[in-house]
Structure formats: C-alpha cells, structure tokens
Image (cartoon, rainbow, N blue to C red):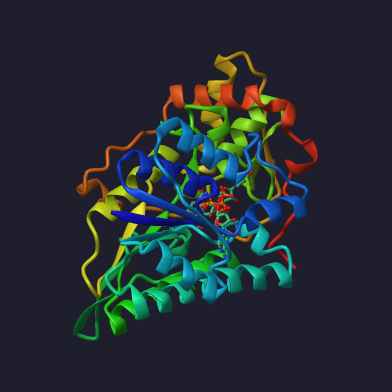
Length: 383
Ligand code: NAD
Ligand code: USQ
C-alpha cells in the first residue's frame, strides 16, 4: 500500500515513516520543513542533532535499500498538494503536518492566527484534493486528546449516546479544548466529519495523548536517523522535558499543583497505532475516532516517577511547583476510554523504570546541547 506521510520530518512523522517503510509499505514524505524554521525563529533547538532531511533520507535508503521519496512543500498551497498527490498516488494519507504546540499558539494574535490557518486550511485543502481525485484514499489524521478537555464525566471515543427529553441520539462528544492549538484540532475534526458525510470520504481521527520517548526500532539504528527531542518551554512536552531537566540538574517544572491528568503514550506505540489504523481502514463515508494513548498520569506523579528513576541513577533531583502559565483545571476527574486500538491489536509499551532509565541516559548523552535559557515557560495564557 502507498502511504503519504505529511509532516514526515517531524517527531511523530519521521518515526512513523520509517516504521511503515520497514513494514513493507511504499512510503513518501511530504513536509514544508516549517518546523525547523519555527525553531530557528524562536532560537530553540531539539536536544538531539537531527540531520538535514535529505541526509537522513539518503542514510535510510542506503542502509535499507528502500526508497523514500520526498516532497518539500506546504499543504496550504493547494497546487503543490494536488500535484504531489497526483505524482505519488497514495492509498492512505497520514496527516501529522500541523503546528502542534499549545504554548506557540498562545504567544500572541499572530501565532494563534498562524496556527489555525496552517492547520485548518492545510486539512481543508487535503479534503478537497481527496474529494476531487482520490475519493477512496483513507485519511488518517492526527487529532489530540485535548479536544475533549477535562469534563466531569467519562470521555468516550469520539461519540456519546445521549437521552434528552425522551429522545436518544449518538452525537460527537462535546469539545472543551484548552488552547488555540487544541481548538484548531477541533475545527479539523468538524471539517473532516462533514467531508465524510457529504462526499463519502473515509477518515480516522487519532486523538493522541502526549507522546514520550525518542527511540524506535528504526530511528535508533544510526546517528543520522536520530529523531528530534524537544525540551524547550514551547515545543517540549511534559515527560520528555522532565527527563531532560533531570539530566542537567534543573528542578522539574511542574505547573501549579500538578494534578492535571493527561493520556500518554510511548512513541513506539504512536507508530504502531498509525499502522493499525492504516491496515484496518475506515469505510467509505465513515468518520472514526480512536483515542490514542495507553496510560493516564497526573503531571505531579510523572515528576515523582522521574525523580525516583533519576535518584536511583545517582542524579540530584528537585521538583518545583511553578505558577501555572496556563488556564486549566489542576484537580479534575479524567477517565477516557481507549479500547478501539487495543481491539485492533495494539500491545502497549507501558511506562517503566527501564524506559525512564533509557530516556534519562539518552538525555545525559546530549546534555551539553541544552540551552538553559529555554527551559522555563515564557508564554502565558493569562491577560
Ligand atoms: P512536529 O512539529 O515535530 O512535526 C510536524 C511536522 O509537520 C513538521 O516537520 C513540520 O515542518 C510539518 N508541517 C507543519 N505544517 C505544515 C504544512 N502546512 N505543510 C507541510 N508540512 C507541515 O510535531 P509532532 O510532535 O510530530 O506532531 C505531529 C502531529 O501529531 C501533530 O498534528 C500534533 O498535533 C499531533 N500530536 C502530537 C503529540 C506529541 O506529543 N508530540 C501528541 C498528540 C498529537
Ligand atoms: N506541564 C507541566 N510542566 C511542563 C510542561 C507541561 O506541568 O514543563 C503540564 C501542562 O500544564 C499540561 C500538561 O503538562 O497540563 C501537558 O502539557 P504538554 O506541554 O506536555 O502537552 P500539551 O500542551 O497538551 O501538548 C502536547 C503536544 C500536542 C498534543 C497534546 C496531547 O504538544 O501536540 O496535542 O500534547 S493532549 O495533551 O492529550 O492534548
């Protein structure tokens, strides 16, 4: 099967492209490289020294003998997108190609607008391109668990059955996103759902939790294939940040009381979930939603787990409760369902001491690349 990975130069996309290629899929990468540009503009950098896109692809092709065609361009440019689809003729499209940082989207008006235009227009272009020329292609779109927010009831996978005034219906689960970035994902979900309904497009929305880890079977085989690992206050995510902070002796940055609870998953499960979605496509006209995470943790508990693993390795670790720069509930109910990917055969890698040890050791290996100026959060949600 031919699979186009949009955003294939990014954290999840690079690992997924190599995984699918290794599994025998014919994979192409589309990426505008805009994430590398945003890093430069913000003076932030991945902990790991990622190779230029053409270098990392050539290394993969030389090592494996498998070809990995590259299309450099922006999916908000419809002509480029349409031309690429005609050239590659995908049977499935995995769409990771969005601005994915909540803090980035909250910097100011300009960054909120950029995030929503980039994400919503890119996805809408894709839907139109599929409708006109690739109506049977399966769209596997990365959404986020943050679309749901933190309601005081169980979170279902995409839909909820409600009885109201004696009548009953199954409706999209209510959305209460917590940033302009998370809102862009809600807008995408609505657009995709509508396109499935009116044009018969087949789509799977993967509401992914926070991803942690860096090594996958493929990205670990050669230094030139190394994946990005963000630790800065804008693109770095909770557990990855805590491990890198622990490695350099910086107090762990828990925002507020630390009771915020989220779904998490290992990057080795991200690649497998995407493979499962592609191998078991949605029906024509179906808009499926899978909650893609394997375990829930509060941020405070994660910090304690990192501290325990780090202390066992001889590191000196403190936990700091910073004033929360975000507006979010710090103590709340959180019970999301996640059975659909398990039913398709997902065998999760649960967070373990050995994974924390390997992430900490990985962070220690590259700790000289850390810019201390980039650790503390600088973006606030507040006025
Ligand atoms: P990333 O920033 O590492 O990668 C995104 C890639 O998309 C980058 O290489 C970027 O250059 C490219 N891109 C962005 N806009 C584009 C456009 N208009 N045209 C072409 N390419 C474009 O992000 P990531 O962490 O790999 O996240 C990938 C996807 O998964 C995102 O949609 C994100 O919302 C979702 N997600 C990520 C996480 C996580 O913890 N990292 C969790 C849940 C969901
Ligand atoms: N947090 C801290 N300390 C930190 C960083 C974060 O306490 O140093 C807290 C935040 O306040 C938040 C939680 O940890 O409550 C998660 O924050 P995060 O930065 O790890 O993740 P988030 O902003 O939600 O975004 C990330 C990805 C995004 C994806 C989302 C999945 O960047 O692309 O959509 O995780 S989810 O959280 O399930 O919506």
